Image (cartoon, rainbow, N blue to C red):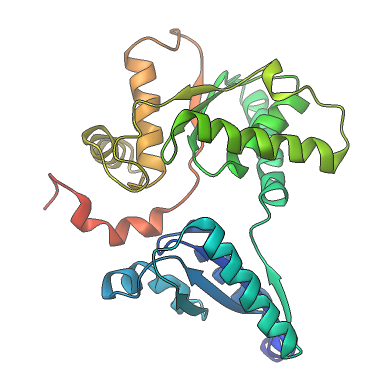
Length: 275
């Protein structure tokens, strides 16, 4: 099996870009190692010891790391395109991971899976909380929910953008799903998500007292690990909605845990109360 994977590796590359703690980068590196492809990760972050620690698992999976500095998303995408073009000039076969509409397809299926589980377990979930960020996760789940006839009320807890920008990301990808699938699905405004902005704080990756409290509570009462960038703020919003009565008593609710547990081990310095 190893010989076959090594043979398949020749000239075939996965390219992906993201921050040093990016779940997408980490999972792409892992997937590449599993199927025998080379992987190049472009981090839009400076090449520092701290960022190399945050990206350690990518190296463990065998990916080549390139730190391109604190550039914005458009500059990072341009760097990915240039890296792919250079591989093509060398006779290689690169594929850039990150098409937001294609990526959203996975969470279309997630909505179906959650619905099937809730029906099977006779726990008809009504409210679903998701991290509000780049949009593929959110738009995909909302699209799947629309295909199911809107059994869920979707809640988006922003962890990265102000509301207008978050709404635009979700809307663009949702419309992209409608176009690409050709399915007769109601527009987003037919059953819009509820946006929760109160946990954004200082923005992406910047902890808040509530997000740290959520990390401690989930770890010490449920044995569940969540982390500062995505899941902690989402869980903080979920807990607040329950404790403040925004969700009626008896209405089942859940949080979609989107991963990132590995990133928690590089976030020790972000805690104020854990020593």
